[in-house]
Length: 119
Image (cartoon, rainbow, N blue to C red; front, side):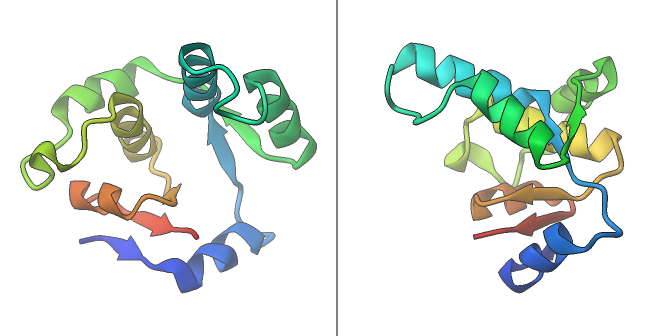
């Protein structure tokens, strides 16, 4: 499994030499979950986007290449352990963008793509 664990997560984020991107998919997920369960998330997708921008995070739009990679993502090792299509799209997006994927969800490591688990 291509993984860097928690102890390195903060180092990756705080290293001034690294460019940190936030996927537009994350704001989309916040909007979807807030609409489905109002009040379940303490901020709106707009507030999330503004906070990311204020923090100097770069926006990463969804590309056609990421959508194609989603369909080709190896899921055999994951099986039914993970079913979130937006998480899978995030992994595919980081793969085609040649970026290291930062996540709090350790199960996403089952996809075998390079990632950092941040807690």
